[in-house]
Length: 120
Image 1 (cartoon, rainbow, N blue to C red):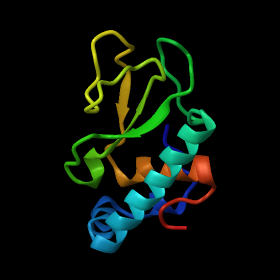
Image 2: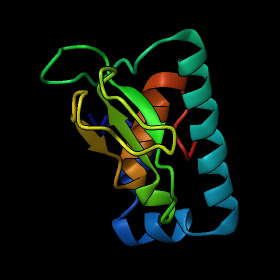
Image 3: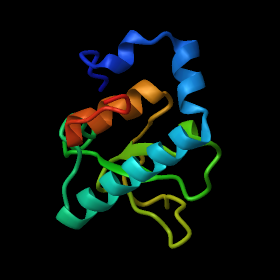
Image 4: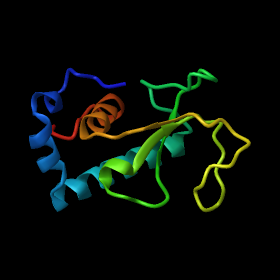
C-alpha cells in the first residue's frame, strides 16, 4: 500500500522515528488520522489504495480502541468486519485487518487520501 513517491521515504528510519516520537508530531498524526477516519466514515467511503483480499471491497481506516502508541493505533479493515460496542472484533464478520505499523505507511495513506503526507 505504500506510495514511495513522497518526501517521507527520503528520511532514514532513525530520523523518521525521532520525528514521529515528538509530542507535536504525535498530536499531528492523531489529528490528521482522526479527521481522515471521520471524513471517510461520514461519506461512507473506503480508502482508495487498499482493499480486502477476500471481498475485494475498499478497506476502511480505523483506530484501535486502546492506544498503545501512535504506531499501534491505526489499521485498515474490511468493511464487512464487525465490531462489538467496546471496539473488539466479533467472530462473525470478515477478519481481514492490515495494521499501519510505520510512519511511512501512515504518511502514504494520508498522501493518497488527502493529497498531503506527514512531512508536507
